[in-house]
Length: 181
Image 1 (cartoon, helix red, strand yellow):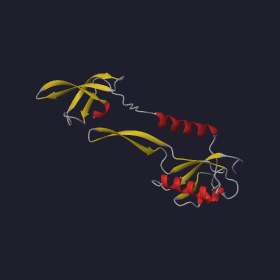
Image 2 (cartoon, helix red, strand yellow):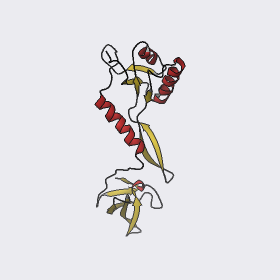
Image 3 (cartoon, rainbow, N blue to C red):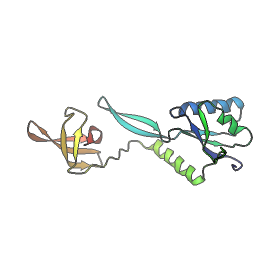
Image 4 (cartoon, one colour):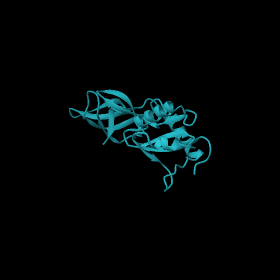
């Protein structure tokens, strides 16, 4: 069974309903006045970037779909209260359905990953190399294919040679304007 005191647990939720489950758990905890038993409910999220109408748009997605992390003291009725929240499937645990707390190393790794993703401004790690063939997906040369002549890692830009009317023309494009073929 679980150790005494606050530990981190993984709650299985209906996939796609993680934010609702977080809201429901927090509301139930507030309603019952047991915030000291469940101080944190967390959904690990990751940022990613997408091109939309020629603009780079930042979006977030769940890092562990179908799971919500909670820091809780599961003595007494706390685990039953959480299990009975709408859209909660149960806890990650042993074969008998008993919740098993995460090990401190796992918690540090997950929380470290969450912090790292939260402070990550704009890291697009797309390793391009000279001679690679890419397709332009944004700008006036949308649809053209070319070969990378130079990679400017510091600026996140590429010099791509494309054929325009039979002539090779150099284009300076950022990483988000091209995709690998």
